[in-house]
Figure 1 (tube, rainbow, N blue to C red):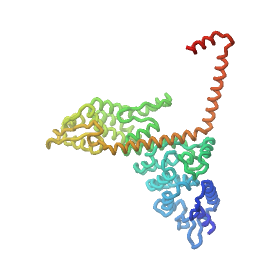
Figure 2: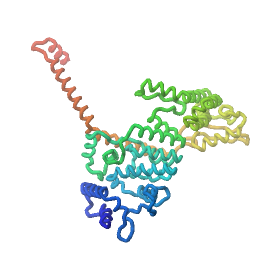
Figure 3: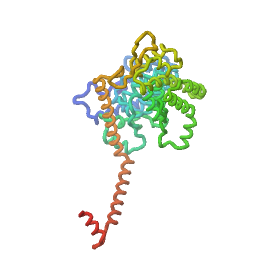
Figure 4: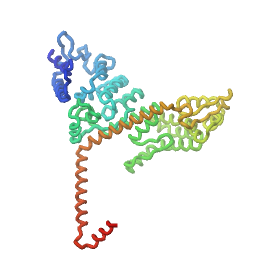
Length: 471
């Protein structure tokens, strides 16, 4: 039993050797260590070492208690797993990709089984970010974290993952692409420029992906953003999953959608399309929300059955906000009495409108100021600030500079990911075959052109061409 314990502690070597291990030496020792662990009998791993302590303390002190029962939120084994997900070495874990992926899956399944999904969010999120801090490569673990956050209604907990853009999908079946990645970075422990070169089904850090993984992640992520009222980011996710109306504009369907699918989508979305059209037309014509509310009530059963009534209520609540914001396009200033008449269901409640305007300004939804000329809210003046340098939403030069730096960093990261993708797929089987095909086509075209351009001595056409060349 002590031999097993010695073997467990053999890697990485302590203290670290001087000079440090090369990538090749580290890779060899890590793979040997993992192989020894796989071959070690489970009975010995759960047995006692010298001094009476367990080699691996599963936290199951009762003989009748299984490891599955011990692995429950609140029990010692669960806490040990949580600590491991927070502290594991992000390089070493690449050699245990299958195991960490299964641990993530089992942790989520167990938390949902005992109706405590929130207990699994933090450790799984931590594990995903430790494996790939950039979160730029999509994995089978991505939909798991969004599903947990939706189930637990902990929408903001998903942001550290879903706020990071996906640039790569892991290589699955193309052996040539995998080989090209290996030729660029032959060792898992190497300093990889992109996570896409070590996250794949071969390393085990992701399971084989189906189209459902992709759709679930973006749909669940969109629902998290909708719950947080981050409409712009929600639109991005919904566009990836399908296509969604945004604000007061309905986007066209993608070009690759078949006519049959378009008819089906149009039929399914008819109640939502009618609501969106009333929203848009009502804002443009400065109408009250009465027709919009009536349409929502008419389709209420459909919205409730599809669990979208909460979103419909958000549309109704946003109608007044957009009505106020539209006034900015026409007027430089208005009295609160006039704003109330144009945007409120109760045209005589000036105090409520004044409070609502103040709320919009304080929330950053309206770049304007209110001048309180008297104690009567009807006489207050709402002044719009059109320039970015004026009003409560104005930004200092330092803030504008910081924003430019952030945008530049995003562009820089995007360029780096594009280069990594070009490098990886430039050695893929499909790309090489296409290059060969194009080369053959060019050679055939060149041979044909040479054959057509031959002229016999004294050919008048050739002589004419020479004359044109002289001109």
